[in-house]
Length: 135
Image 1: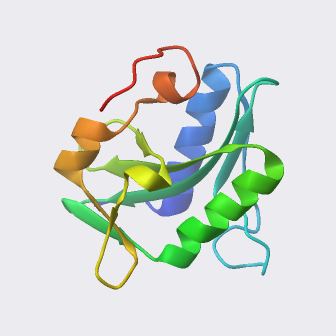
Image 2: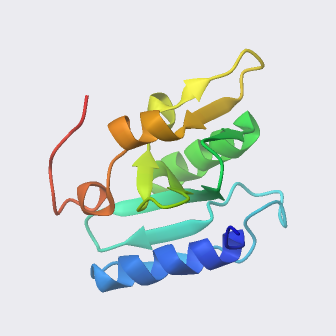
């Protein structure tokens, strides 16, 4: 059984605090407001992250383009780096920028587990603790 999305968001917020980032779940994310808000917002005074959180027990997940568009819009206004934070069953957190996600024919996004494991960044990489860049 996959944890409910809000539990995954709390888990990520906790991990960010452990890495000395102030982090919070956006209380109105997920369509409760017309404003483009990410699921998790974090920063340490130098690096700012806006993260749309997804979790799945399957080997791929589809994301509607308006969610990623809103993430990018918020990030640009706020000055944050936009990421999709994804948790596949039995994996650690993986993070992808919108341009590293595959587009579908209907112009939405698709993330496959194998590709995320290959191209996704780990938490230490997006917070600047490990500067490896995967290509």
